[in-house]
Length: 229
Image 1 (cartoon, rainbow, N blue to C red):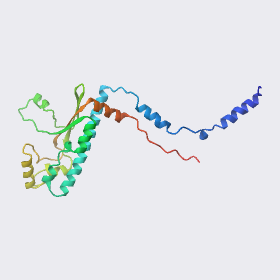
Image 2 (image 1 turned 45 degrees about the vertical axis):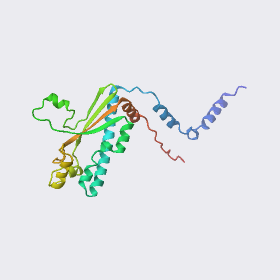
Image 3 (image 1 turned 135 degrees about the vertical axis):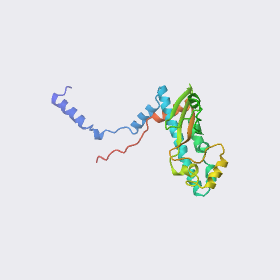
Image 4 (image 1 turned 90 degrees about the vertical axis):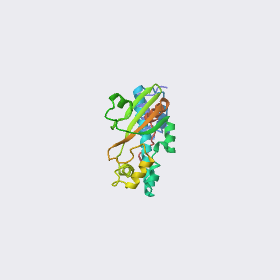
């Protein structure tokens, strides 16, 4: 049976009217599925991407460790014993930091910066691996090994409680006690803004690549739809 032309047009119009956009039911979670599918796609990580990830991982681990250090020192100093608080100034050995470092296959350490003697040659200074500046050092000394370094700067009053000027920031007795506890380090007599040392991390390629993948993966965030009626 052949429908008249006017009836065909009327039929199509009625069909379109029956499928208005506000009446179409979409499958739930389709965007989330698309996001997760994109996250599981194989991505080619370039050498520069791994260097970026080295900086991201180094910044994350050291910032986390510094935060824990400040909280721990504030708690111990509130108890009144500076000597006891100084024993906690090893954030690289905190269980939380060690757990985070293991996750990203990293080996963190803190090294004190010692000014080079006047007789030191530029080559000897460069070989020391520490520089008194505020720049990060990112490198790849081997195919599967990455290196991260950033300075530790005396930037708050909490650090001055142990590293500041004797007789001003800490008592002479406390300064003498810290010198006895740490005879090989210049633990006191520092000033705000001075470089105390450096964070140094060695990271495996597997951990750096995993951190890069996590950092760049798409994250699903559920958004509530506006109420239309």
